[in-house]
Length: 124
Image (cartoon, rainbow, N blue to C red; front, side, top):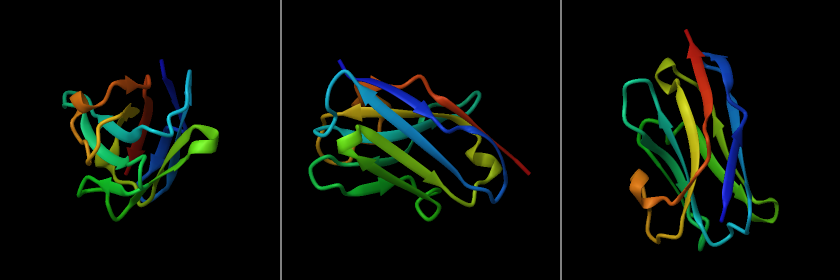
């Protein structure tokens, strides 16, 4: 069973950058599509970014696609989320997740493995 652990969250000011990391253990995730989700207080968990395992193609939620970049290093079992030009509305707990679904899965129910989350707080 794949286990995911996120890191890199913290407090940032609007306009700053943060880089989130997620490491997998318990097996190779080279054949999983990986995603980043976030959940703000009182809101549902929402898709942020994904990267497919078979062609490395990336896809993003509209509000972040010009500011965030998802990448992966299969040799290290790592997935990253580079977040630039942070905004207050980016404040949330960020989760990495893994799925074997093909296509561009964006719903939380599409993913089978989840990390515990890392808090990102952006102040004005």
